[in-house]
Amino acid sequence: MARPTSVYICQSCGAQTRQFFGRCPSCGDWNSIIEQSFSSREQRLSPQKNSSELPSPRRSEEIASYIENKELKRLETGYKELDRVLGGGLVPGSLVLVGGNPGIGKSTLLLQAATSMAQKRSVLYVSAEESAQQVKLRWQRLHSTKSNLRLLAETDLDFILEEIEALKPSLAIIDSIQALHDANLSSTPGSVAQVRECSAILQRLAKKQGTALMLVGHVTKEGMLAGPKVLEHLVDAVLTFEGDRFASHRLLRAVKNRYGATHELGVFEMRGKGLFEITNPSEIFLSGESASGVATIVAYEGTRSFVVEMQGLVSATTYSSPRRTATGVGNNRLHQIIAVIEKHMSLGLSRYDCYLAVAGGLEVEEPAADLGIAAALVSSYKNLVIPSRTVLIGELGLGGQLRSVTQLEQRLQEATRLGFERAVIPKNSGLASCISKTSLKVLEASSITEALVMALDIDRELINS
Ligand code: TYD
Ligand code: MG
Image (cartoon, rainbow, N blue to C red; front, side, top):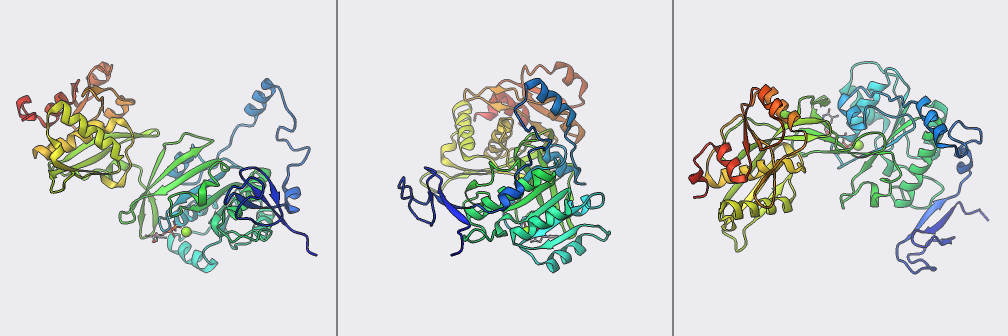
């Protein structure tokens, strides 16, 4: 009789069975049993006794000197936007998951990065979804230069492991992890068991031989990465590639990074010849039009600030309860800001529908955008245009007060660089020296009403009427 190659383990109680059950016979939990293989690969990939990786517990001072000596050497991908999101480049032996909706450009991004890195190092691109012919066609479309990139169109895990072991590349790309298949498991490719097992085995090999590994993971219908987030805690970094399918720019973010800061944002544009880096993102988030309902803020993401436009529309409602819809800003934030406007500016917005959108499909989470959101809504409600070349920065307190924000100096510098003329900021932000240096006309306000009077450049009586 053939020996079973896998075991079924309950994720709730840890019980092991030799066959699959929908309900654990031990603890009674439903859908908690997951298949796991116990192949001979385990032994092959386990670290050797005399490996240089901390073999036994060490004293803390020993560890400190060990770490100092072993300074992280990061690999540059050739794309500054990608390197920045990774925290300064790829760390050898690290496992990076790149997630995103189908068709957003993950394969294009990784193929471009692989080609660029392959000019100096050995890089293996494993295409599990597309045939070698398809990848070659795409590659030819994107590049005219020669490169020694190795391409492998394969879905079988054993074959891929052998290839990575033989080639020992600096970077291996797996496109996508959901298409890989471990023959020791009976479940289908893309199932939780397969995704988890394949990634764990690949990770062990990558760490052992210092190969950086980038995995592509599709976002499932529920909006999660590679099934029920099975990979997120396993990998060293999770990058998401997002963007409006109908707009050409794409945003790359780190949602988890063991080797760098998260909240860093990389901006690309999809053109006829692949993805291009956008080093000055303010360009794409700014239309330069002046109309009622348009307010400009300076957002700060990661280590960079850039100017973004907010668009508000306030119109009399025909519904029994008015509509409040926001794109790029949380709906709860919109509700809160509308409540502050109603209470502290005495504007009756309860009979109006309020819509808000951030230009360019960007998500703005930071509170420094509050004043801009309020200004966009009030400007639309009053049908007044905020004079162009004005930026609004500030967090709104529930009492209608304007609070100071982080990185104000950098935000003002960015506005100055882009030729803005006026900035409305919170009072007492302790920036007297910086303000005197800038060519911006800086207006300091302590409340929402004061800030909007300044922004719209109108008399105070007009704002509350
Ligand atoms: P792709 O990288 O295949 O997406 P993913 O791997 O995330 O599923 O890219 C898909 C889209 O990108 C496709 O609809 C066509 C578009 N595209 C361009 O506009 N220009 C290009 O040069 C390339 C290669 C793709
Ligand atoms: Mg793809």
